[in-house]
Amino acid sequence: MTTHEDTMSTVITNIATLVTNDPSLGDNSPLGLVRDAAVVIDGDRIAWTGESSKAPATDNRVDAGGRTVLPGFVDSHSHLVFAGDRTEEFNARMSGRRYSAGGIRTTVAATRAATDGQLEANLTRFLAEALRQGTTTFETKSGYGLTVEDEARALRVAAAHTEEVTYLGAHIVAPEYAEDPAAYVELVTGEMLDACAPHARWIDVFCEKGAFDGDQARAILTAGKARGLHPRIHANQLSHGPGVQLAVELDAASADHCTHLTDADVDALANGSTVATLLPGAEFSTRAEWPDARRLLDAGVTVALSTDCNPGSSFTSSVPFCVALAVRDMGMTPDEAVWSATAGGAAALRRTDIGRLTPGARADLTLLDAPSHVHLAYRPGVPLVAGVWRNGTRVV
Ligand code: NIG
Ligand code: FE
Image 1 (cartoon, rainbow, N blue to C red):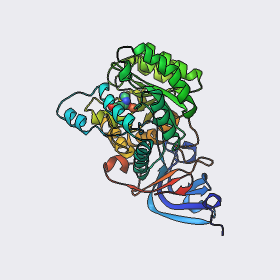
Image 2: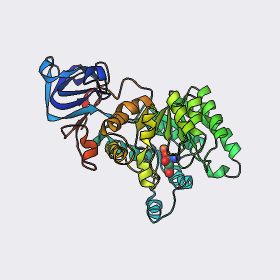
Image 3: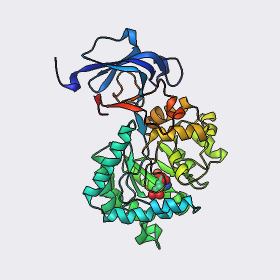
Image 4: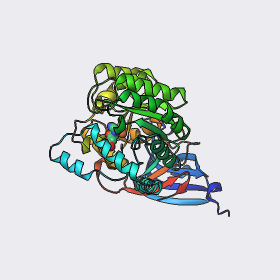
């Protein structure tokens, strides 16, 4: 018998609830649920899913013990290249102060002062934390460097750990350019873009009062597109604004936050191919009004759920926590929230090889110590993740 995992096949049997996210494989619901199921992993891919009794023979066998298997979570929005924390700012907020984009400057100062090794160690720690909670794919951004060198190194550090790297030189105007934001936009779309584009897949901008307005955001995303980066955007987080409609107009993969939306914003999303990524950790940690997921879903918008993990507005790496919040406070059903945290995240990254357990998909799976995926919302705060496979290898 071979001992190389990449050439071995494994069957996971005795799965009470299997979430495939392929309606044709299961019960015709969006989650494509199969009861009393099995999954076959061959190398780094899913080879087969179906009823346990029909599973083909394999080299290895894992008994799921009547628990749940679902696709690994796809966390399509995080800010993990940073140093320091913002405990004091959080404390002040919980005593009544409002959140504003200005706090980002605190993390910029700490990040610039950190060594590459410190940034890498911090990132690795949060990735391990996320993996233990079932996240098998994550996107992460620069945005706490705001100089040519500091942005480029943030992306280099991130690119060593994920393919989903986003250039966010336009997080806020760098402090050195406070008096001349136009010159900073020139830097972000010029020299900084040149240094960053080779290390990133995406370009992002924080379109908000106190950060960048609609015209600046359009200039930044358009320049990124011309360099082969695909747009995504922080839009309509703290107030109404042009970000969401700009995202649809530029065919951004995702408009993120979407907390303050007009009917025209919802219509634009419903008629475009931009995913609305909701980040309930941010509303939780800033004591802000919840995004209305129900309104978006009822309009036919594709919704993703993600952590936004960052030291300022949402210091959680837990997708299960975000699922629970979305169900309790944003009008999502448990099925919808689980779809949004897996297939929705994949859609927000324009990926079809993850976020589903179908033959040919990447073998990224999470085993929950629960009889169904509903327990992610039903048992909030409980560490239900009992196993994680990434690229076919068991890592938790
Ligand atoms: O997504 N909104 C902009 N950026 C982050 C917050 C960053 C920070 O406060 O450090 C967000 O919430
Ligand atoms: Fe963010």
